Image 1 (cartoon, rainbow, N blue to C red):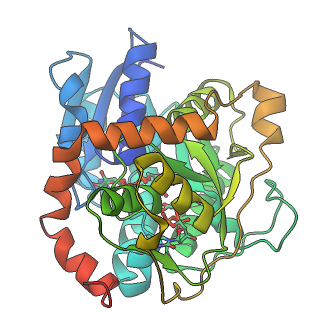
Image 2 (cartoon, helix red, strand yellow):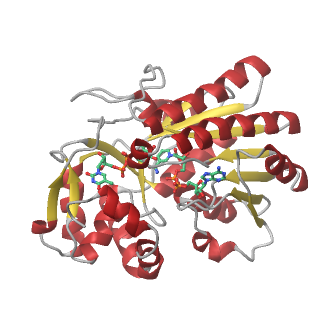
Image 3 (cartoon, rainbow, N blue to C red):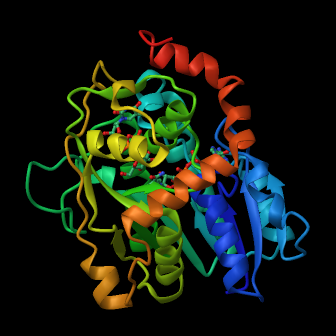
Length: 338
Ligand code: NAD
Ligand code: DAU
């Protein structure tokens, strides 16, 4: 493993992963292949843009010619596949692009990788493919897939394509399924950065439904270290769950953010629920811990402190986002507040 192509490396987790790998492996080169949708932002990578081990290629995973050219030109031997439409709410208002990018794009990438003779292909997926849990229990890798949103249905489809290529063609694929990430560079449409940005601007904090839905939160750097672990030590054809055993009700997260920033709970506003809103996610990550020795490094309280600090110190980064096209998205998604 030497030349890694990272798809979606200008997004939230992808850009954190590029930083993580360049820091950890002096001998690797990283090619960031990203089409730069609304969620892709090269500002996330200014610290490495002059590093000779890093290259950016503007390209679309749905375009076989662009993918094949990048694989050849950079002698790519390994792929870590993040590129996707990633926001559940957007998949409810516009599912088509989710099928195009997440399903068709993954199939195009798989065919091009197979023809190129890739050595290892890590597909980055999500716990949402398992559906929703009741008050107890955990998702294991054996939990049947039961995706409930167009986003999670498209991710489940892409997981199954990767595993089918492994089974049918001996393709060197692996799949990871991680719980909710938080940390630097997360686009402010997602719960934690949205609440931080609104709190800092004294705007209402829109909590869906009763606020009692539960998510299992993991600091993004811990996700990156888990991906690195699976990339180097995982068994081909295997699925690995990733999670921090860190369940929180949404309302408690929002209160924690307000406390950290020093703003009043009166900013909290309950709004119309997300259609089909999954109630609870919780990951059993025993396989990656027991078989590969991965452990998360960050406690939630310290991770949230670091995250709030990052958004405080990088205000221009998210102010630029929320003052652009995002304003139209926000007005449509949160009509009462606008
Ligand atoms: P993101 O929305 O922040 O970034 C997605 C990136 O993919 C962007 O840079 C975008 O420009 C790029 N992209 C989109 N369509 C593309 C295309 N056709 N060709 C090339 N690039 C394209 O997403 P994220 O939150 O960083 O998530 C990354 C991956 O991790 C996704 O596959 C997602 O399903 C998965 N995941 C996310 C989380 C989470 O909590 N955010 C948790 C588990 C798994
Ligand atoms: O579980 C992994 C998944 O986590 C990833 O696969 C997705 O890419 C990622 O977006 C995330 O999905 P969620 O739907 O869980 O994340 P989101 O930040 O959109 O919402 C988290 C919870 O907060 C969810 O229960 C909905 C709620 N919420 C969200 C927003 C944006 C609110 O109450 N208000 C909001 O304004």
